[in-house]
Length: 203
Image 1 (tube, rainbow, N blue to C red):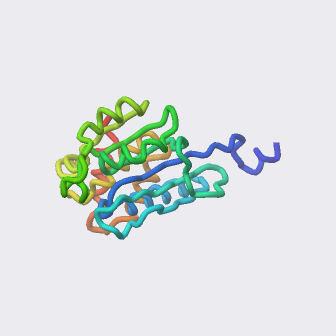
Image 2: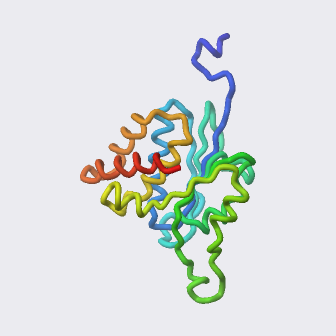
Image 3: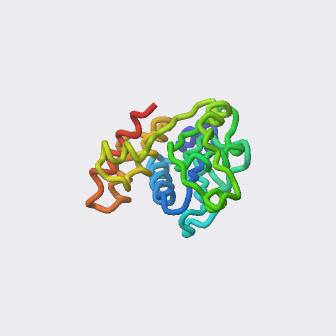
């Protein structure tokens, strides 16, 4: 009873989210927007950048954990509720972190890494087929197309992907819109809001 009076949720559920991609895709901004939205939504939030965001073209991942009380920002394999991937091969790379019944939102985009370009490795062009087999819920978004056709700005791809992610999270749209307005350059606010809305309509 005391816990209820103090406004503490009775069930201390923790939700784990991975944002994965390559350097230069705007994953860090997306992670910051997501963390800001969750904080505005009343959750305790921990975020950890695990791989070098500054290495353009290199593999990057950000862990975001939220709930009533979060003590560690790190997500263990097999425990991610949501994976948001900005590139198809990165979705496969981090798929072992998805828990049974989890959701993957993936950008239908391939960025060939150096080993592939040098002929020393092959790109998994069947990545979406593999993801369909292993992820219970898979949302595929052509973020570049959405960004250009709906927002008129190719640089809003990351926010379009957040829109698709938001459709699987119980956070008011108004909070997302507020944090986006506060997080992007003023001249791009309207484009980013359009991209967010359009991304949320892709299923």
